[in-house]
Image 1 (cartoon, helix red, strand yellow):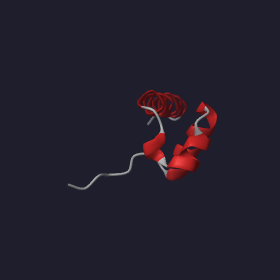
Image 2 (cartoon, one colour):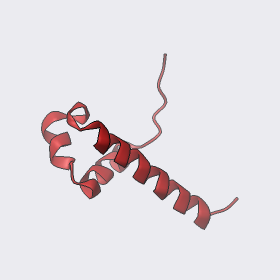
Image 3 (cartoon, rainbow, N blue to C red):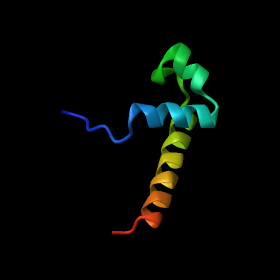
Amino acid sequence: MSRKKVMSEELKYELAKDLGFYDTVQNEGWGGIRAKDAGNMVKRAIELAEKAAARNPD
């Protein structure tokens, strides 16, 4: 089964910095973050996408 990347690596790192767990990612990789942090990252990405969609309606 192939997984399609939804978030760019750049966005993931930016969100990790904004949410305060970038150091964990740097030291342990993405597997080192807590499930709560991963959930918060997805939630924030959705918020950003919704704001972008509201600014640029098709």
